[in-house]
Image 1 (spheres, rainbow, N blue to C red):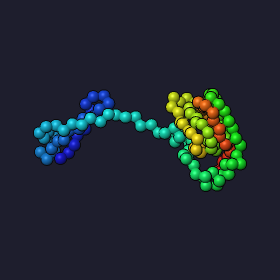
Image 2: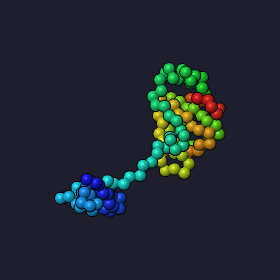
Image 3: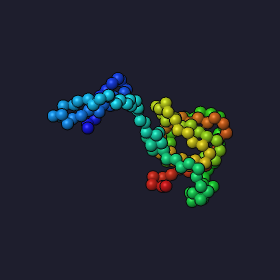
Image 4: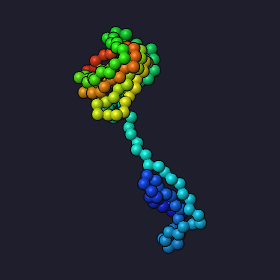
Length: 145
């Protein structure tokens, strides 16, 4: 048995089983078995598109390994900030959450307390803070991990 796929209507596919044993001529077998598959647009996660790396719920051992307690502290309240990174920056969020909307995008990434985020050099975005927020940050040179 062979299978044949044909377009039934915009965004859908129709599936029909046929018998090709009859000199290569497709003959429909009994009733048509049809299923519809809705066409979907698959989008890559923004973190992947913009090379933003995130580790969720970072362990104390990992924080110690990175020396996070010695990093600079930055705090803010509810606000929106346009931001661009001139160098790679590693951020550990201690309190609150941030929505990061890359320049030219209508989608956002969301990071919360306990996340370790690495923003790449030359990344541009609007940052939205909905309340008290505190992070520790460290600027990184190329090749530092």
